[in-house]
Length: 218
Length: 218
Image (cartoon, rainbow over all chains, first blue to last red; front, side, top):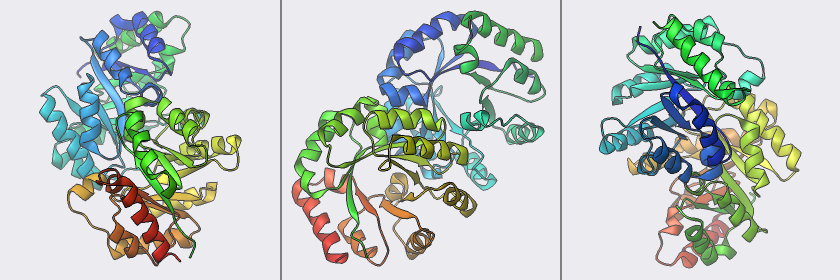
C-alpha cells in the first residue's frame, strides 16, 4: 500500500503564526495547507507568502470553492497554490470550471472535492465523469466538538471512493491512533491541524505522525 | 406583499474598487454584500473597511461557511457583518454553531443558508428545527454562463421555502426582467452584482432596479 503523505493545515489567523508553525515541522511534512480560516482572515496574500517560502512542498489553498470556479482557481493558482478545494455542494459545472482552470496552469495543479456528510453518489458519478481525481473525506470540526468519532462506516465509504479510482485525503481532528485505524485503506494524504499546532513540542509531534505513517504503511 | 430589499454583491478583487461601486449606488440599496471573492482576495479587512464606511446599511459577509462555524462567525461579526452565509453542505452542527454565535452578537445578527441545487428537504427540516430563518436561493454563476435560466420550478421551490417560514433571498445574475418574473413570490432580498457593477452608468442601473421593485411590489 503506497505511503500516505502528511499535510499540515494552517488555520491560524495570521501568516506569521502559520510560518512559525511550519518552521518547526518542516522536515516531517509533504503538503502545506493554507486553511480556509487563514484565507478568510488574510486573503490571497497568505497563499502567496507561504508558497513563496516553501517551494518544495505541495501547497493547498483550501478555498472550498462553491461558485465562480475559474475566478477562484485563477486567484489561488496565480498565488502559488498547487491544489485547491471545491465544496461538495458546488454545481458540477463549477467543479468542472475549477478543473479546467487547473489544467491550464499545468499537470501538477489539481482540485480536491471537500466532502461533508451532505453529498450523494449521483454527484460522485458526475465528478468521476468530468475527470475529478481527488476527494477530501472529512469529519467536521463541529462534529468532533460534538464527540463524533471515526467508524467502520467511514472505512467503508473511503474504500468505495478508492475502488472508484479517487485519491482520498482524510481530515478532521486526526490523532496518532487514527493513523492505525485507517491502516487497511488507501490514503493519499493525512491532514493534521490542531493535533500538531496545539502540541507542546510541535516538531516532536509531527515526527510522531511521520513515524506512525511509516509504521502502518510500510 | 412586503417590498424586497436590494443588495449589491461586491465581488471585486480590491476594497477600493468595491467602495468606488457603492459610492455610485449608495442611495438605492439596502444591503451591501462583501462577496466571497473579495473576502478570499483581501481577507477580513474588506468586511471591516466596508462596514465602517456604511454603518446604516445591512452588511453581509458572504463567507459560505462550511465548517468551524463559531470561528468564522466571530471573525465576520467582529469585523462588522450583520449577516453571514453558511453553505448548504455544512453539517447542521456547523450551521447551529454559526446561529448560536450570531445570537451572542445581538438580535440583528443572522445567518443565511446559501443553497446550491445540491441540498435536500431533510436538511431543510433540520435547519427549520434549529431556528434558521433565512435562505439564499441561488442560480450559480457557472450555471448562468452555461445558459441556465430561471424556471417555474424555481418559483415553486421558493414558494415552498416561503410557506415553511423562511425569508428567501434570490441571487444569480438577476436582471430587471427577473424582478418581474418573481413578482408573485415573497422575496426578502434581491441580490444584484454584475448587472449593476458592469453597467455603463451604475447609478442609473441601480435606480432602475429600485424602480422595478417598487413597480412590482407595491
